[in-house]
Length: 470
Image 1: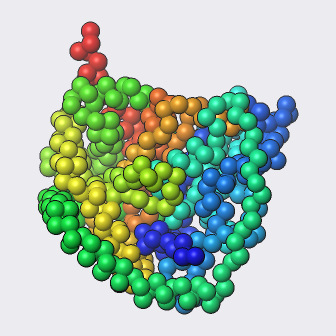
Image 2 (image 1 turned 30 degrees about the horizontal axis):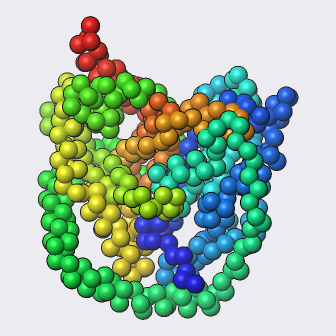
Image 3 (image 1 turned 45 degrees about the vertical axis):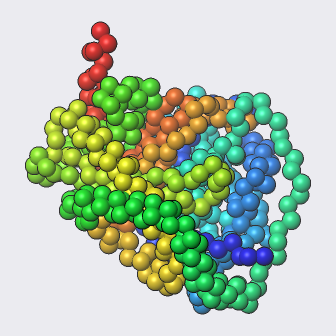
């Protein structure tokens, strides 16, 4: 059996991780109580674990751990965890007093800094009981080596229910495959290293036999590289980049998806354009508070991850993303002018094929010697290309449930890394558009100004079209 080897981009998240920058993707969901707790508020943890364990046959990766290849001659592989125990991955804690949203966020800030144990599958669910109104929260974490934003949604939709009275599932008993010996891991790694160049040559020869496809790919690559050069290779210097500490601060922003869509439609822009315009408003307020000069042509460079999965990759975990490097015009004071500038930029980038090119570049790294790829990953904390990340994840348009309790809202929480001290994650869910700002508490003690500025940015764009309706 061929080893299930991590792609270079997946391993990069393991290499770049440090105690100050745990690189797991997280989310925070809040549920109506349903039947998750007894009458006295005690969580029904055994039943919760049994329900989740009943879904793991659909997600084999959730019962696999990482095995390193001896001497690091090749990238690690996924192997069955012969000691898998759901107890290690699902627990519950009481929120205590106070039991409001601020207290829940402080707890979440601490939980997302807890490292995942690489001796076990790289995921964990923590249910939090005792919220106001008897509600229950869920802090979900999975390592970025295992999932990206879109596959993280697939995991959540599999572990949770799509109806309040979903029946319990009883899959057959799971039998793990034996752990490969160090000798097998070493031998498979050497074989892959020897055969890899021949596989790459075969792929290249296959492309050469289809000149039309080869020409189209070359044309898209050239267009994307021209677009990237047009946006600039180095990101502008600003206060967003710097060393990352070991504490986090989270801020939540709530919008109605229909309102954001209408604001975009009024100005021939997309929902993502409106989000970026609101983020630009927050950055503008933050820079002004910090005393940074905002000339009319001042910009910041953001990375916008873009999924490149197709229909055949549904439920496939791992990272299948490209990305767009977009310049946000923080120097433009008028909200509508900012939105129109951003819409023009993103339309140009999408037409260039830059997202697909980024995916091709990530895949090309797989052909590099593992040690070279690791050296690249270990240097990400000094990267000069991006000021911050803004990721927009499409979630389900219908509600999800856990033991009959409806998930009333959900927020994505992205990790900080690569010298970026401030990031924004966006999730659409059941008619809502929810944003979570993640900041390094030491580097960005003024993150609340940024979050408030985002809210003001949305409000300004809503106001720009609403009067036209009367």
